[in-house]
Length: 219
Image (cartoon, rainbow, N blue to C red; front, side):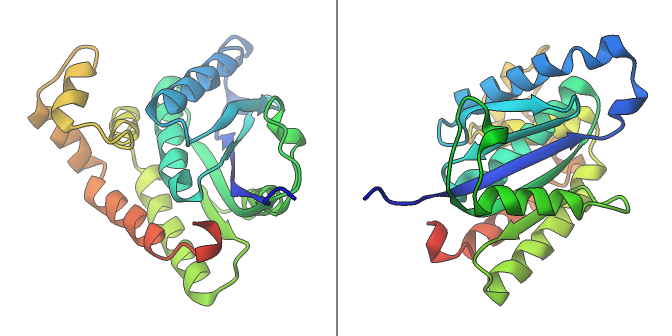
């Protein structure tokens, strides 16, 4: 008997999509493809297959390693914010998967996908980030809620440039290397200023806090 699939379903929805023209909307499939390539090239445990765009303004992918799901979610939101100039609502659902369709992830089902969808429905009144855990320990879910609220506030305030800078930091490369890869390249100090404006220290602390309380079930 094969062991159960456990991971994180990550769902997103572009904010303000209905307000842009049809020509601009047609580019979003390519933006998501580029974002998928960025994640795949950064860490092959961030994504199974490729993120799927559906209903025009929504997307979803599956992260097979629960410990990497939060960095992956932050990275794709930051990348898409920079490319599309629109921010996204993002919902993470952690748990088991009954069926994973790598080619068309929206056809997958299981606890992780149910929680991700439920979290997306809860994103009202300007909330943009949700984390739901199937392991209902009070410490784990309370910490997840606190992390989600903090990241919600921080990410909503990012400029496209700041968002991309944080996305790059998720790859684990050095600041010097990342600054030199930008087009045009900038200094390490200039890159550091972008991260300071994005409140990188707080983002990094939130990720570490969440990782420290991931239930044993997911590790």
